[in-house]
Image 1 (cartoon, one colour):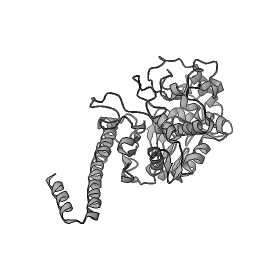
Image 2 (cartoon, rainbow, N blue to C red):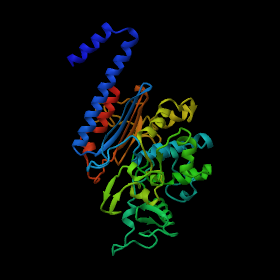
Image 3 (tube, rainbow, N blue to C red):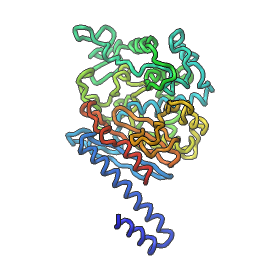
Image 4 (cartoon, rainbow, N blue to C red):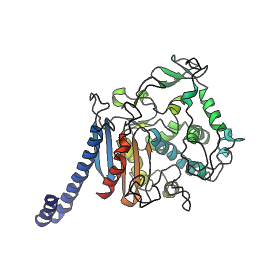
Length: 417
């Protein structure tokens, strides 16, 4: 500390004015980088994850953009900036929420509209009157999840008819993994199950991923484009994002894709290049709840656009009012902290375990992913943070990412420096 103070003093005494600010900025940048290095390397040493990508943007510049560790604990392939990670539920904001925001602008639907107006299959169900506003803020009472992977086996332990097969053909065209394929009509079973699920208490915040299964068909019915094509057209290709995609093995070598988990229960193999989320895998790998793969450099422009009121490199991708509507608290007078699609900080400002960190502002918004990913934006501090890891390797029971408070500490570092 004394050395740092003495260094700042010398800089301001002897340097010309035009160099002082630059040297001070460089010193602060080194300080942030060293903190991030220590934190992420500590996480690797404690086996919270075998490797990571970290990108921190603050006040119009990228302050940290680094890779750490290896794809797996065997230390054979070091993580590079080109490598793609399974984003898990970060898909809900970088694909689904962006798509809904653009649909909202293009087709003018009201967020108070019942979703059955736009998704006819939900008519005559207990969900037909739920609005986009209720569902996207997780206050419609939908159950969190259905473990579809537990419903594909018969009593003898074999795959039920018209579910999965180890042989790819016209009846089983969809990839679940390298040697497992889903029946062409299995998606209909998934939607029937979702439609029939019971509800919890309306108005209470219960995080649910089930609505997001409908996103691809909602986009298709409104725009005439597939989910992937719509996102490419309005965001990914338009921003020249080269490494963000569903079904990454169709475009990239597996050496450029970080493995997720050694699945000993469902797929009974290393999940590598295929979506980790079981339900999304049964959708063929393209779903609104999970399935997106990316590297930090391809995510950063999307977050920068959201931070800069919809503008990226001089082009307006989203209206500022749309971003405000979706990223603010949906029900500011109640106890639900969520935005529309976006996660928001917990309301207890005095809690030392406040989510996602003690220092974020009330304006902050983002999302985390089960595989160990995080994207978070804080307009008040003019910053965003990207953390990509495969914390579920080799198995999802790995809890080090949470126990070591890696994500909260990383956010606090970005805000303080």
